[in-house]
Amino acid sequence: MGPGMMGPGMMGPGMMGPGMMGFGSSGPASAPIPGASEVRVEAFNFGFSPSEVHLPKNADVNLTFSVPAANGVVHDFTVPALGIHVVANPGETRTVGLRGLPAGRYDAYCSVPGHAEAGMRATVVVN
Image (cartoon, rainbow, N blue to C red):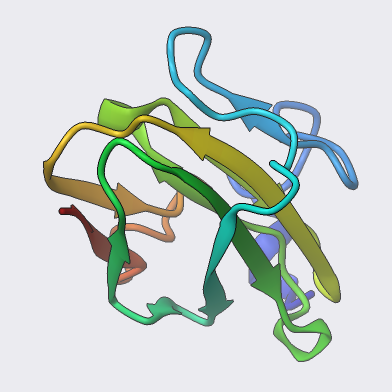
């Protein structure tokens, strides 16, 4: 982790701890769904690959989010409109199950303070 990540509003007591994963209370995110198709998203400093994530509408899908160890910083993949919030520490991969997503284009970003502003944004297309 770089020295700039320990300042006020970056890493500290207000951040989610190691290995934690959060979900919007009204969203469809849950435990991985056996047999569902998988879509992978990888974080890098400071962006996502792919930058446009395609998910099937009205279907079961597992979203797998990873942060390479070389990143050295916790990242998350957050899509407020769909209730998705997945957190991974460097070197971790997290998978969440999604059910019955409505068609549309949705904004995604990393909610770690300063990351979205640095360009860590993506678009989720459900079709």
